[in-house]
Length: 317
Image: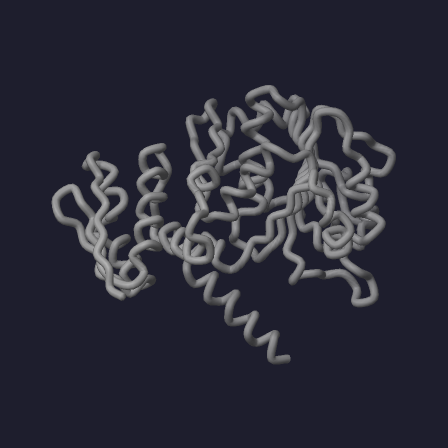
């Protein structure tokens, strides 16, 4: 049955944000819903069988815009699909979660529903797992959150680590001290830090040892207090390494574990510590877990298509 609805939006700026340039957001909603959607004055009118889903999507977009959130085409699509699954879901809280870094006057808004959930869990939980394909923001958001907390003096230190599978965790044969040995493997983390902070602030934090680099193999026997510890490329940990890492948690600390369980580089006979760890801790409600998917990829649009193409190819093998 075809129905007609309309949504009145008093604020012109909010109306413009929802509609998008040349009404591109409305055109996207039309394509997703099969409804006719257009703006007339300060109203958005819509007609078709899925008007209730369209209305809830527009209402969430309005709240996001009114609270300063960014509206982009990918967000419109994500909102629509989430509301289609559950008409009563309120995504405003998740999607308006953001990370503010006052010293560099930067605000990072979530670019997907899962990113918003991730930010919430980073605030609420002491151990957080995030896994999924490259380009979904797992590492960048963890770094941005950690820097915000450190600069706001809620924690005393950030510790960065990852397993070094390429060197078999035996760094002895590589030149330099252990920091020089592991630095090349942490370049993605440094790239994120450099894109967020000014060079001056970055150098200051590193020189004061407020950002510490620690090979995973060196963590046995340590307890992390007043720290945020980020374990990247966690899919390449062994069972023993993951158990060791998770039991380092001390007072006022967070452990953030990020990885892509489809990209395990361990020898075939060795099980991934992240894969096994997710199974073991999945029923512990105090641990946050976010499963990023292809729809969360926020790099170049081609990246999402490439990931989908590889997934299809690998399923055929």
